[in-house]
Each structure stands twice: as C-alpha cells, then as structure tokens.
Length: 295
Image 1 (spheres, rainbow, N blue to C red):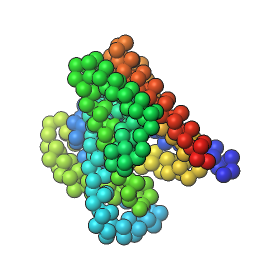
Image 2: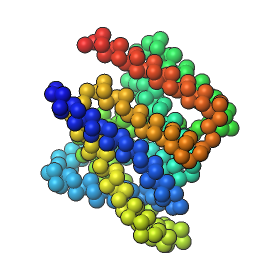
Image 3: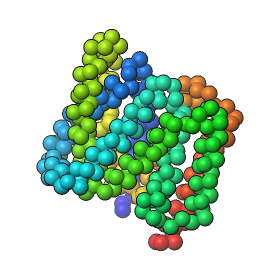
Image 4: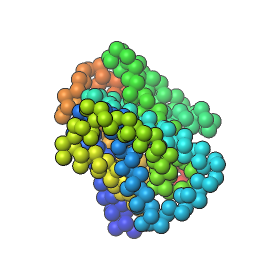
C-alpha cells in the first residue's frame, strides 16, 4: 500500500475518532432535553442523511436487494436493537453527567467482544485471555464498590457494542449500507417517539432555542460524517494501525469527564480503570504476537 495513501487514511481515521470524541461535547449542549427524545430525533435525521448518501452513491438498490433475504432482515433488526440500546445509554449517560462511565464502557468493549468469541464462536482460550478476563472482573468489582452499584451504564454500552459488532460481521453489506438498514428498521419507532414527546413542555419543539434546533437537526449529519471518514480510513490503513486508534474516543471521554466536567475520580476508581488498561495492554500485546506469528 502506498505511503501517501496510508497517510491520508490515518488523517481520515483521526478525523473520525476526533469527531466521535467531540460528540460528547455535542450532546452536552443538549443536556436539557430528554435522552430518549434526542435519540428519536437522531434516528429520524440519520435516516434522511444516510438515505440521501445511499441514493447519491447509487447503493440503495444493493441495500433493498439484500433486505429481501429473511436472515439478513433478522440480523439487521437485531443489530438495530443493539444500536438503539448503545446510542440511548451513551446519550443518557452524557446528559446525566456519567461521561466517565461511557469511557469505561468503550474501554472494556474489546474484552466483552473477546468473551463473545469464546462463548458463541467457541474460540480457544489461552492463558493471556484468562488473565485479561480476571483483570476486567477485578475492575468491575472495584468500580461496583466505588459507585455503590455495578457500573451498569458502562456494562450496557460494552455489551450492546460487542453484540452489535458481532452481528455486523454477519451482514453482507458495507458499513454505510448496514447502518442505513438499521436506522430504517428503527425509523417507525423513532417517529412515534418524536410524535409522543412533541407536546411535552420540555420537548425540543417547545423549549429549544435556534442554536439547539440546529444541533438537533444536525445529529444525523454528525452520525454520518465520522462513519464516512472511518470507511475511507479502513480502506487505506492496516488494521494493526487502525485498531489501537479506536481508544482515542474513550480516552477523550475519560479526560472530558475528569478534567472538563469534573466528575468524581477518586483513588479507588483510578485503580478500577487501571485494571482495565492493564488488561487492554495485554490484549494488544497478545494480538500483536499472534499476528506476527501467523504472518
């Protein structure tokens, strides 16, 4: 692969991950609104933007052709449920001052993905895997003690994202096409949600300022832009380079929650996060060693 192509791919990847990171700040500007209502608007506006892009790229026929297959429809429907859980939990956590938990969720998602491989795909478990799972268990136990309850928002984000990633691999479509299919599957409930909340005193139509309206209506575009940049990056950058870059997003959220939004980060929570980080370091070292051995 030409170096110039990989350099441009890295730029696209940085753009995607930085945009995803800044979405936390974006949602914070809309913290006065109900998180479920915001997700309804996000799905509706995303459907408009994604369908427009599909039509422009002449990919819409491919999507609807794939949807004729019952198994594809079923997988996309399940993926759409996981996506809605992930989006809603994330937005709810951000607007209710739990940004650090969103960071934790996306930090432990790869470990949950690994567990999914062992449980569902019956992949072999090595000693390093057992150590990673043990460290993650210690982390969850410590953070449960620190919070006084399990970090359920982080666990829900990690679980939904891991299952979503697994389901995405079963669909014979590009990331843009499959996301469009998932959003279409959620469109009717999302429209219903927007209609049901329309007349509430604290709803977007009744309470939003001009700037807030613009932010709400641009949520679809903010969903599509990083996806398109990530798609461009994935075609140009090696997975061994792209993989570690995904942790820019939870790192960004961790720093935002701690330094910008002043969420509590006591010594015990630092220890809990540290167990996750050590587990991730082992995860990457093991993945690198496996890749090098197989190459």
